[in-house]
Length: 628
Image (cartoon, rainbow, N blue to C red):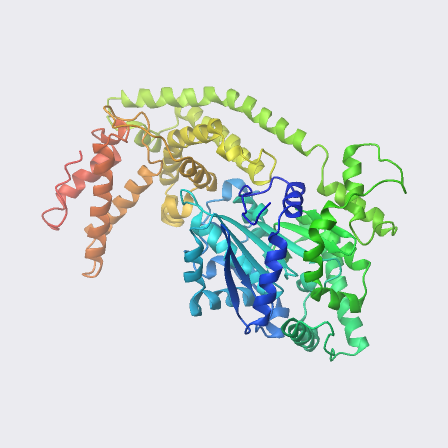
C-alpha cells in the first residue's frame, strides 16, 4: 500500500484498524514528522503532503507549566467557541428524553491547559491557513507527540466538526504518540455519537507514564513533573542516543510512580456508577506497544484496565524512559503486527475467537506472567465480545419488527390530522392539538406520541452505544422512516411544549426544548442529501420544515414585543426578525412545502399574518403579508 489513506471514515473494529496500520506507512511517516517538529522551535508544527495525503504534525516540546498540566482542570469544550466545536454543544434540555430521569447532563470537557494550547495555535499561528491548503487532499493525517498530541486531537476534532457537512470532505485520521488523556467521558461519548472513534489512533508504550498522568491529582508533585518535562523535552530536542541527566532522586521517582499507579488503579477498578463524569477518559483506539508487538483496543473501559495492567509489569525508571521510545516502536510496528505466532507452547485454543485473544496477548510484554496474563486475557475477552456481531444483527432485526408494530400508531395520527383539516374551526391539526381538551381521541393521540418517542429515542440510544450496524444511520429504510416520523410528530411535540407554556420558563422550543433525537435525525437526513423532487403542484402532506410551528411561535413573541412599546434600539431588531421569518414562510408556501393546515383560516400562522397587517400603520416597514 502506498501513502494514500483510502480507508473508510471510521473503523468498525480494532481488528480492522490493526490490519490497516500493519499494511500502511502512516505510523512511520507520522513519527518522522513528529521528530521533525521536535527538532524545530518549541510550540512548532510541521505540514507536509505525501501523495494525496496531507500531514500535520505537532511537536512534543510544548511550553506548558507543570502546575497547569498537573492540575487536570477540565473545562467545557464549547467554551472555546460554539462555532469551533458545534458537535459538542449542549442545547438546553434537548437531550432529556435520552437520559435517565433526574440524571444531570455533563458537557464534553477537556483539559484547560491543553485547550489553551490548541487555541494558541489557532489564533497566533497560520495553522488554519495551512490546513485550508490541505483540504483538497484526499485525506489528512494529524499527528502529535506527548503534550503536542493533545493539540493534534483537538485539531482533528475541530476539522471533523468543520467538514462533516461538506459534500465530499477529506478523510481525517489522527495518530498520537504518548498522549496524555484529553477529556472526560462525555467527550468520549460525543465522539462515539458522531461516529468519529475510528478516526483516532493513540500509540501508548506499555509502561509510559504520560498517558496515565491525569488519573490522579498531581498538585503535590509539581516539582517532580517540571523536572520530568525538562528531561523529556531535552531528550526530544537533542535526539541523541544518550539521555540527559534526570534531576530527581530515586525516592522522588518512586513516590511519583506510586501516586500515578494508585490513580490508574482506582480508575481501572471503579464501578461505572461511581464516576462523577469529571475524570479523564479515553476515546478512539489505543495501540499498546512493546518489544514483543502491539495490541489494538477500541473499548474505553478495557483501555483503562490495560493501562493499569501494563503499568503493573513496569518499573519507575522504565515508566519515564518509555516515553522516549516511540520511534523504535513505530518503525517496527508493521513487522510486529504481521509476525506469525503459534501455539506450540500452550496448545491450540478451542475456538478461533480464543485463538485471536491468545495471539493478541503474545504481542504484549506480560504474556505468560501470571496473574497479569490471566487478568489481561479477561480484559481482551471483554474488548472482543464473541457475540458482538450476532447481537448487532439481532438488535437490527428486533428494531425492524418493532417498526412494523408502531406503524399503526402513525396511521392513527394521520387519521387525526385528516379529521382536523375537515373541522369547522378551520385551524388545522397543530392548533387543534395545542388547544385540545380532554377528549378520548386526543388522549389516544398523545399516548401514540409517547410510544413513538420511546421507540425512536430507544433506537438512538442503541445507535449511540454501538449496538447497531455501523452504517445504520445511512440505510434508507431508517433515514426515511425517521424523517417521516419527525415531520409528522415533531409539530405535535412543539404544540405540547407551547400548550404547557414551557417557553415562558425554559425558553423557546428550538433552542431550549428540542429533543436531541430530532437533531440527530436532521443530520441523518442532511447527510443523505434530502429528497430530490421537482416543483410541487399541490401542497405537501406534511410541512417539510419540522420546526416550522416553533418558528411561528417565536415570530408571535416578536410581534408581542413590538406591540408592548419597545425601546427605539429594539424596534429595528424586531422588524428585521419579523421580515426575515415572513420571507422564509412565504417561500415555503410558494414552493408548496407546507401542508394545507398552515394556511388554514384560523391557524396560528394565518392569525400571525393578520396581526402583522394590523401593526402596519404603526410600523410601516412591515410587509403587506400576502402569504395568507
